[in-house]
Length: 114
Image (cartoon, rainbow, N blue to C red):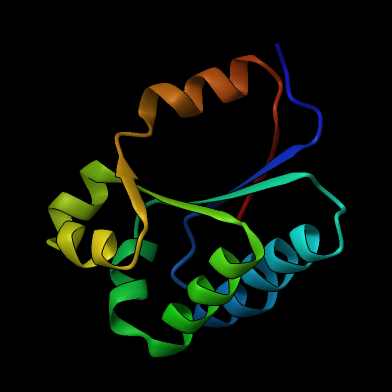
């Protein structure tokens, strides 16, 4: 069953400006302004390491979490990049996302890929 009021943002870009000006700007405002009931940002690829390295992204994650945005990261990526513990210390859920992402796609969920 599809949740038509849940937006997933799959963030894979290593571009800092795109992270700030799209992923977090839209993700935070979508939740704050109730455009979507639930918003989940998925960190996959380079973003898990970027979050550890850039204070501005850490601040954006804190702001998003305060608004109720769910932040989660690909465990395989985080493990390979050596940042799993650091992400978890920021209250970021770290799980294997291959199967859940496949289910989202097959169920036609609302997904933006950046």
